[in-house]
Image (cartoon, rainbow, N blue to C red; front, side, top):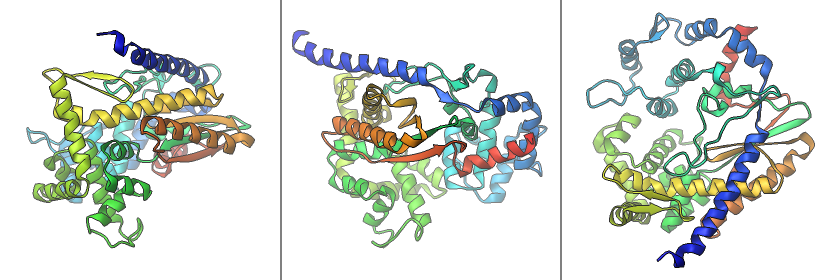
Length: 409
């Protein structure tokens, strides 16, 4: 019984072995850190915490005595007219995932979410930075059930508060590039399910707006700027479906009724029926066979505690992880200086004059990896370039960063 599958097991083992070599290379390269600013932040952190609270919540509407107050936050939400998800007990859901999701919907929540994350996750004393000014930590490959890496959140710069990523700064003469797959899990689900309408939506470069158009919620010539609210709503539906979110959960995130949320989910089922059959089929397969596996053989064994949602999520999550591993193999074996993998992205380093060429090579490695997993279909990638002396980080992160820098200066 073992002999027929031995060649397949050997092939998978060799890929995983090559990935461990890639992991060793990425852990060796590390991420360049501005150590002077890091030292300044560490030396004045206690005072900085109070300063940030005063800047974000000057009237003391949410924080009291330096501590987050759930009761005051509840009153603030009512004043803002924001419907917040709740636990079965009726209390507010205050986990990081809920805050992150709500911050994407309501701009007023963004600074609150950033500050809460900062106060709870900013553990700079644990950040692993060597004498050469580079952040290195164990990537812990295969640490999650889907096979993704699980590096320490306190020792890894990308596990800390998002605004602290601005500590990432290329050294003189070098530049960085952050390259990620565009809507990776949406693309994986579209291709593996064989849902042509979903594939067309992915190819449109804006699957959220394509979904809204297919549903008839916006005109065919609608754009991201002309219909931002509708796009935001349908984006949340797409993301919610990706996490197998229920109608009550979606309603809480959209601030609408459960009936309206169920109607939106039904629209998604009607627009992409093959995807829904494939997703449920994954769960049925897992429960019937006691396991489910990725395209490269990574297995998840089903127990009495395994949920339907876990099995439906597994194909997109696990095959996304396979894609990451293959891209890391191709890139490191090609000599690209990969600083770190970050979920569905890579941070790479190159001499400034070589950056454009290295970005092209990395994107080709990622396209090749996606084609290997998806039978020739190449997912798109986006690249953000950071040339010395610029820093890593987008506008939302820079708000907190700017506050901290003004305080230090």
